[in-house]
Image (cartoon, rainbow over the protein chains, first blue to last red):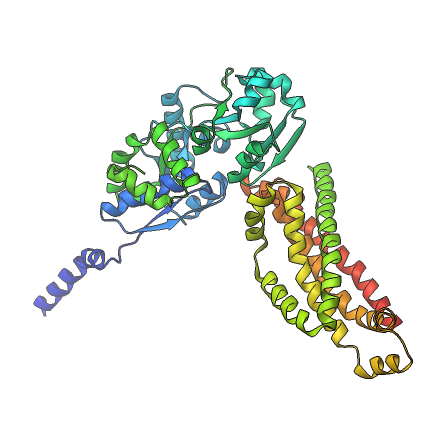
Length: 293
Length: 199
């Protein structure tokens, strides 16, 4: 009887190991927002975790920041890539700050306090918001900086997305910090189609992200944010503390990958997906293997 | 927000209305030919059936290389969506005209043209009109997709609500679309009852 009980106990104790072997361990659910870079970086996180032996479930294309955040709070996803600047302004509604380290510690502290989410190590990549135009229009209108553009906006057309019109660090922020910025015409597009409007002559200026693949491939110019409206936007994995508690290795794995994601790497990966129409999963696996993509 | 909503509703109706005009201009004659000429009918109905299954969003994206972004491709995509139900209903309406009535008209010495405009068209109208109603409602609902290619409309509000997690503006946009569809449905329903009462 005693022996049997011992066996049962031993069997029970080994259950977690058994289920892991059978691939039944609770999988890590990785989320992403609805744009190329978020897909690619989430895919990098997912594949790095898979290489380390985790079972990963992908829950990509979660609309906006707010939707990804809601999914985290409900426990529908365990982690997703988020940007420090977006977290500061769009989620925490705090005043912009320019120092990337101070910004990172602020969002880490506030996310821990408000949501019980942990910010893992950030990447050097800074995907700032920006306004972009074509080289021809920049030369014709003599605009290099956002200050140059502010008073001239009233004769120009903007192609953007709805989020940019509503976010405090979008058009309202430009108007607040620079004055002006009353575009003659504002039209919103699907996030992937803003540049079609700009390159197709339907707009003169497009809202952009500095690591967009199109910047490099389509000869666009980013107008310099000379009055520092936009904080740094370094990307980092944001993880539910509960998940980290039971899978502490997640931090070790992702902290090993994040330093490799630089501006250039991000631009090239985005271009590989958007211009060369490669699959984000293939691009991510080439990146992790150190191969060209 | 509210003045925007009104402007977006007007733009929305503009897109749906323009698309309906295009769809009527193509769908009514196409449906009539299909109803009258057997060989045309098979082709037209096959095309219409395929057309109905194409997702409008896919049509928008497929039109991109041809027509770019803006209102024109949105109207073309919506018209493509609206044409099939019109063609199908017009064909159905025409084929529903009793053969005896047509024989009587021919016996009275009416020409083919006269038969079409004075006998077939009025009798086929109520059924045909039901297709127009369906097309109009589908067009109003689908015009929300125009926002993705910079053509505006109430989709702007829905997408803004989604992107900024603002359920108020999302619901305002969605409810306005529903109200527009309902209003058009009621108006066209009244027209349909008059048409039926007349025949």
